[in-house]
Amino acid sequence: MANTALITGASSGIGRGIALALARRGYRLLLVGRDKPRLKAVAAEIPPELMNGIYSVDFFVPSDLSRLVDSVLTEHGVPSLLVNNAATMPAGDFVERSITEIEEAFCVNLLVPAVLTQRFCSTTTPPEGVIFVLSTAAQFPQPYNSLYSASKSGLRVLAESLQIEFGGKPRVCLAYPPVTATPMTARFESGRFPFHKADPLKVAEWIVVSYEAGQDEISWFDWEVIPKLFYRTAPRLMRSFMKSRRSALQQLFRPSKPDHPWKKR
Ligand SMILES: NC(=O)c1ccc[n+]([C@@H]2O[C@H](COP(=O)([O-])OP(=O)(O)OC[C@H]3O[C@@H](n4cnc5c(N)ncnc54)[C@H](OP(=O)(O)O)[C@@H]3O)[C@@H](O)[C@H]2O)c1
Image (cartoon, rainbow, N blue to C red; front, top):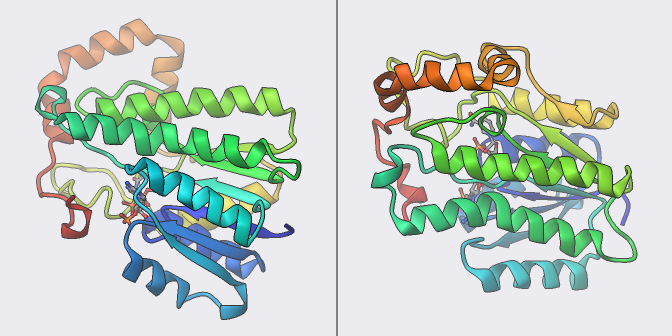
């Protein structure tokens, strides 16, 4: 199916931005998210002739994932572009996280994109491209954000493996957005979280521009380059540095506000 994109996590933040950026380039869209009213609001921003469908699914419910794949294959066929973007970030001390948060992080952030990619890429007409929306938390360990960091690291390794395994057919593209102003980061007060938060629409536009330009690894040149390079060149030294800064890291990642009400389960 030419120029059709399925975007997970399209109801919000970077996913919404990717949907709008792809619509500007004439892609027909399948929007996936949990919150139906907000999915409908995003769909209303897109020319009706480019809206192929919205799918309200909770990826933490296994039957929702198979229902989604079966419906898409029956109603529209395989999308030409799959954007694995949906994620959850249960930040804070590991020992204070519930079992549900642990399971949900690995399910939504790692298991679901693996299954979606396998289901679509194992057909006789696989997608032309798969974008994995990762994070710099996949490039170095983030204590006190360990579930997010571990699940995104697993997803990075999966995506890098598939880049080699698929040999470019489909193309596998890894995107590492900077810290961005979305509901995911709204819990971090700007005073205690002293980093600039990027505009989600600009981040999404850059991901799409870079994908269309043929880039298979999309990253930003910002302050996160420093810990990324530090960890790449001297992992043991960086771990011992972080160990000496444990309480600062704990403060950084401790959510100052509860999740947005729509995120509550
Ligand atoms: N924001 C940042 O600073 C940042 C930085 C680097 C990477 N990223 C990555 O960028 C991607 C988008 O994040 P964002 O910042 O745009 O976050 P966001 O605004 O909170 O969006 C997350 C999306 O994931 C969906 N989602 C979460 N749990 C789900 C579930 N159980 N079932 C189905 N959908 C679910 C949400 O759907 P509902 O809202 O409908 O529940 C929402 O559409 C993520 O992969 C994230 O890791 C973000």
